[in-house]
Length: 401
View (cartoon, rainbow, N blue to C red):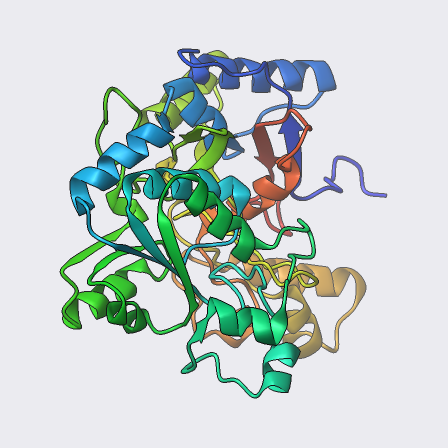
């Protein structure tokens, strides 16, 4: 074995931290936790290491919360006493149920329009086999709740065991509002019931709003238009509103964090001062990946990363080693092959490799989406106690020792 040669590429480490509370100096806690982990575990920080902080602890340190009553007050101010068409929500107790409770407390009547066979992020109300067997077309057909129950009965999500149709219906009624549930995938369908619409989709919201406004809706708002300013001293998010929020208690949500750039720059500066290393820093939420069994696309946040340092801009610019080995250098092996591939990598001048055959099959995604997904999988969503993830060697390649 060659001496002084690295045998490890990218490493992702979950960093244990104290429990973060409102008002804590998050930048100090994160920087100190990473430096202490390096000392304790015997690894060194390097330039261009990436320190990633989950959005949850950023919001918690900021105290960025809103209650059901805060949400209700904002909805009431923006919709008055109109019947509200609540369309395209995701099926999630964590992500939407408390928001729905606030909406329902403000409304006399809600027409809840659910997309089918799945919600936007892949939670399944029905399977395509069920739909085929019933002879329906989800792109054009509209079902009432009675028709849905007649054809399909009660359908519980595989991983949660919850019948979200019944759960949302009961939740709305428990808040004193009347509810009518329909199943449709065309945004304009809701205008047959009301011209005041709250669209709850995440990544398709701009298109949905455009379609509704063009079709003559009187009020069109999204979750990103609620809680964009403080209500009775609450938290808020001027860019995303209720999007990216999570259940905190039965009566409150933790909002997506705001003003994150000062956090990432402060962490970067603290680490530089303490170690002399120029690290990159980002805040991350949900990763962007799809579960092959449950078919759920993880990204329920409006973005993977709401803030990051300048070195994380852009996309990877990589060559596919197996392409080089199987094509350009198929006659070579051993040290000769290694040398030829290394030379090709070193010849990269930083210009885009788009269209270069040797780059085909590499992942043309934003760095923050890729790294954020890695960090989300590393930190998990349960009891690991690692809200900070240190990624090392991500920007290295085959030639780096």
